[in-house]
Image 1: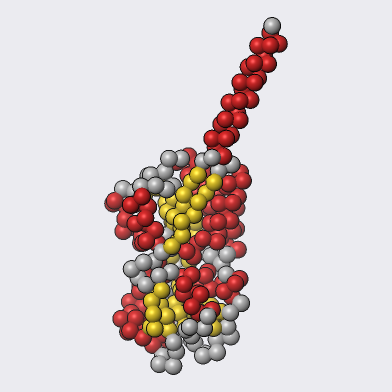
Image 2 (image 1 turned 45 degrees about the vertical axis):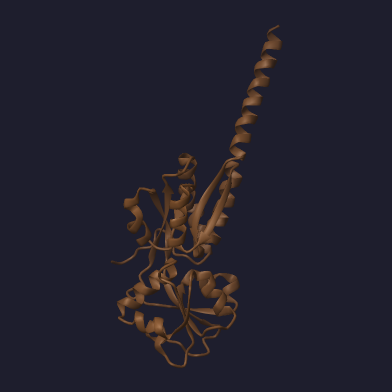
Length: 261
């Protein structure tokens, strides 16, 4: 009799454990991720999925476009824009909750492999008449917004826009255009230029941090998240030792970087 009861209890416990595991396995979380950070965040997501038995979907695009998607849909768990101004801009709207710093990115000049046009480490080179120049669109993504900040600091943004053959929505489209040989020069996130498939055809020319200040990458927990505890665990992974090693591998500065004011 007692043995039968114990068997039944054990069966129920097994069923409960299996049900809990199945529920967890069917849990899907959504990350809104700026284009440049997709590679490290995909790798971190894979580690987390394996560890927690969940599925992470990644919506990628320009930082402003992504925020508007998250706001309109009312769904999702995290938002990672390409620079901190997007948190400052939208914090008052009530969608963005707590955050962690997962590293830094920085603007750089990107040229064809071997720098055949002898471009110097100065954004004013974008005004050279002998160069075909492309630029990010400041209205759609962080690469264009930060390019505007850098060029405004030198007082040449309107001139560079006028000199550009076209504006791209994000860093991926800038890199693809450069790889196709559509331009000689662009101003983009340096990590994008260092990705292996881009570095085969392109070179990065680093800029003085006083001209192109490293920008913090802030991973925000969305208040729309239905799984905030899992959300916080993922944020800890991304900002911790394991996640930071992945970010460094993909050409980013880690979150221990000292940035001057």
